[in-house]
Amino acid sequence: RQILNVFGSEGNGWTEIGFSMPLDSGESTDRRIDPAGETTVLLAYSATMDNFRSMHVYRAAFKVNLTTGKHRPQ
Image 1 (tube, rainbow, N blue to C red):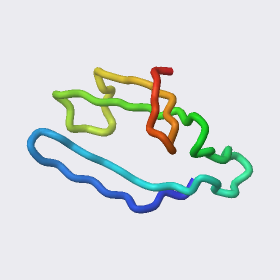
Image 2: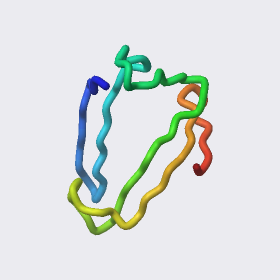
Image 3: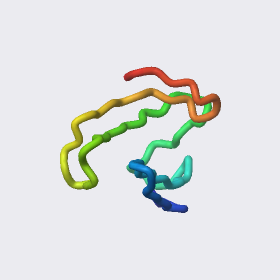
Image 4: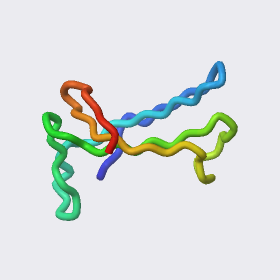
């Protein structure tokens, strides 16, 4: 999947990362993302880590509707 509009920032003890990707990459190994359906979002974070390569203490998976923002734990 092609990743676009990558950005990040740090400040006041927070790190933010973001990106965009196409809903349909056209690749045979990718499934189309339906914005009105549920998409799995994985989150990993830790108050004491500033490292993308280390295991984060807190991990969560959510089902998110990208159109409404409604979400639930997976």
